[in-house]
Length: 275
Figure 1 (cartoon, helix red, strand yellow):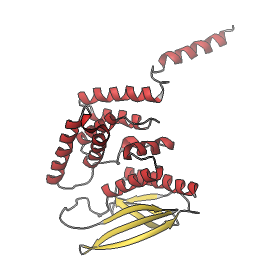
Figure 2 (figure 1 turned 90 degrees about the horizontal axis):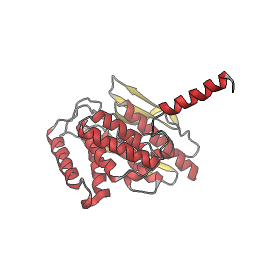
Figure 3 (figure 1 turned 45 degrees about the vertical axis):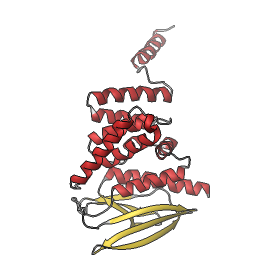
Figure 4 (figure 1 turned 90 degrees about the vertical axis):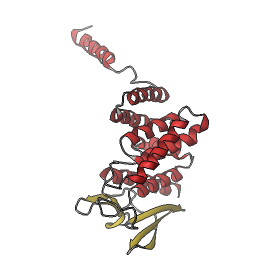
């Protein structure tokens, strides 16, 4: 064996030694490892680090255990992202039931979130995105949504996620929201065959106005585009059939509009594929 070959073999073994021991763990074992890490980080009060581990776990192609949603909700509550925390804690209660190890604690935290939401003014959202641990590419993202919303239907899961994002980030054009006035623009999305049905509810002088837009997705470009404006405190999705038309508007949040774009793109592609 020549000197060059011996160097190559030595380098190979050095790489193996340096490689983390969990690098090749099957997804279900990696998920268990990450959940243990999250438990430890939560006990130490390291909320941001715990969230990063939850993000990694959510991207694995596995069925998420009930405890994931408890810790996800706990961490997001500590990070002052009440809407997302509430969603995850409610999912834990549904999945685990009264026999769950954290059942009483989850209910207590839901009550605390409700009480805080009732007394705190609605200011600019600190939330970067809804359910960040579930973002990711490929089928893993959709499967995670199916686990979250307890459905086998990928289209239903995506519609529920889109509506969750839209509900949590209505457009008002204001950094500080008022709780007593009806204002802004709110959307609700549904699917009818190959049509996306978008209901838009807006207010003029506090009087509701309703508009319905129906889009047949066959033949449209599924890869949606978005933009944001700091001056208007707004982000929007361009209409799939007219890239100059603001189709859906939300409060300014680049990460939320990014997830909304991804979810709707996947939804349109699924509807086109199934046609």
